[in-house]
Length: 619
Image (cartoon, rainbow, N blue to C red; front, side, top):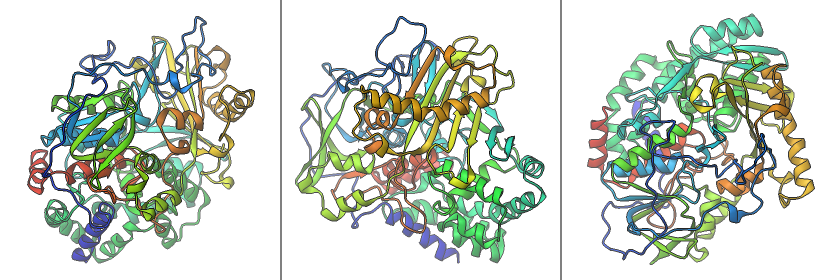
């Protein structure tokens, strides 16, 4: 059984990281002449965050570019043309070549670049916009420091083989993120509202009180069945994976003893259950005979928040990993004291101190292919940046395809990408307002489900609300709150496609489609909140996502269901071109994209270098 699972895991990793058997050597027999590119930015510390490497002066995703003399920044303050998005390039004194060029500074791209710098590679990250971080960047308006993307985190402080993949990367870079901790969020569902707490016993008490004794019994049955499997799900550290047969050394052989021990602890029944890790999580739920509507709806909600699909579409391994993080003794949730932008800051600090570079306002127009292989990128300015070893795209699969010369792309590869289903897009609401009149015990996170029968993946049905200033006073002016509400990857792009952002139709649609978020916010914050008194009011739409985040159709990512398909690998049919991020294995979410970046970085160096890194960070 052990040998079978090790080979199966290795096969899955290799299958998802090698296309047509293509691999890459860390030493290539050619050199490319450098050419000048646009400015390489040396970041300066934020005045509100000592020893930080980035100054966040404005947003490229959801913040307005125009200045206003009024007391409120309205939702109509977005730029009216793409020309306002990117500043013109300035003279650049750095070299226009690197061992590896990374296109995009999302968390996956930054993890890849940071680890490559840790391996001693000359790496350059090219970012189209004036702030790094991709969908995870933060931005500031009138002293309010907003998150544009993820705000629900855990595992930053974990270390060792079973640590969160992002924590493993940060550890390898010698970086850490100060966090506030908490253990609950408010839930508003058709049955009522309650405070949901994580931990091994707390949620049972909440569930029994709110959903009844039968629901609590089924939840206990579920945890008893899956928590023992978490040992197998977490047996191979993400940082040990690579995209060639070297994975048999860095992962399978290296961790065989611990995996043997974990199977011995689980016993025959548990070991047999571990074979379900690569099946949809709904298979486990069905096999246990769980029928309570609230339990099944709750699991669907957790699945959707984690990966953009319900329990019948998410890998059991991914859900079991999450359960082990949230329902073990002493567990907690975390929020970076200086906002989610602190994650991006830490990754860039690690990159730069190890000799890596990042250039903002450096829009990649195309990937340069010569002699059938990727050798660099062409910027919008027409300048060429050469890559001696590899080009890594942190863009989505659809946006990466747009960067490639059509004559070098196999039709089968292009057709597969075009036929891959997409998650829908987002509506966003960013608010800055007075704390006066708001409950003192307001929680940081709130989840609103309007109708279970419609499904958690239905549009206008689920709203997530984050109020980070509850935990971190650094992110808002004194006596103020910031708030980010959004519909999680459920907003249909078709409703918005082709609309002129300056048109009356667009403005009316934006007002109408944002109302579900306004109502959710008003319900969560209580009668003391007045939308008309907000100092900052910003509404983002799928067109905002598409335009500012360079996301095809503003999508959340691939809608690939477990059991029906697998996330694409990291190599491509074009030699020396690799991909990382939420369009690649292991999928959507911060831990997943961090792992994808690590896998690509590991694949571009020798097995001995990879093993030395694992030794150095103690895993």
